[in-house]
Length: 415
Ligand SMILES: C[S@@+](CC[C@H](N)C(=O)[O-])C[C@H]1O[C@@H](n2cnc3c(N)ncnc32)[C@H](O)[C@@H]1O
Image (tube, rainbow, N blue to C red):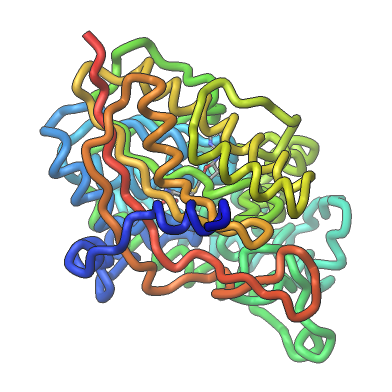
């Protein structure tokens, strides 16, 4: 049996009933405030809800150290828990913060009328100067987005301004020349660009109205959301009751590029250009090559197998797991004894070697006093990244992308 076969056979077989329990095939994943802004690899709210209900109680502190657009935080608040979210991407932090900040909808409606009135007045906006701006937006769109941005910057109330910046961010995505329904930056083909004439102000108004509708269903609780790096959690030891999270499934070069997805909305909102362009490099597995600080038998076998095919890719995978290991060590430090860490992850393939990330996480957890309670499995009913890709750029050599996810439950056994 080859190393790869051995790894494959070691993987747990999917239990049909378990898949059904966690797939939520027909669930509305955009209900309440969840639909205000798209975000790659969002955790579906129903999973967060079920995990929080099973493994925590009212008033507990729920941490999501990779909070993205804040699905876990919003669900924690709806269930009467306190929540803390951390993410390395400032656009994600903004979206999450807006989702967990209740604002009186009539104030938002009033502000939207004010914005619409301002849009009818003459204005000479400052046109931004980002690199490649004209490649991604038509001239007319640049002018209209500049006008909107100028008006939004005049909103005095910080929470209301941030709310409308999120609506603006979604509008930037809608009116850009980026190919639809994909999270990486690819430009539309020329013939499509010619026919594409978005109405920026109309798009913005529709996005704002939808978001205000979501705010009408807000539960009224709020969470703490911070920009940060979960390899170094800014939290006290034993301060967290439960972690519910979904880390990136691999490095940004070959899985989801959160920074790329966020680049133009973040630049239009006014985040620092140098930082925005560095997000994918500073994210998990994106930066300097790092060595493992733990031992995992399964990971060793996987790395040896990938190395035979592509040394460079083996080093990328090692860096990603070294970073993930640092985060899991931090989970162990901040969790209270007996607290649970619920981690949603997909097993991906690199150089045609399937990586059992779920099994590796269980082995890393063991190194840091986190015992394995159980793993649930689910199918991913819809997704925006292609079902098959060609990461090695060899014509005809396609590789299956992730169709199932594992929900790993660990428990801290210290003290
Ligand atoms: C799978 S997404 C989380 C999606 C989120 N659950 C949601 O529903 O929107 C993973 C997130 O991890 C973030 N991330 C990557 N490296 C990080 C790090 N070192 N520290 C904190 N966040 C990081 C990415 O920016 C991304 O938002």
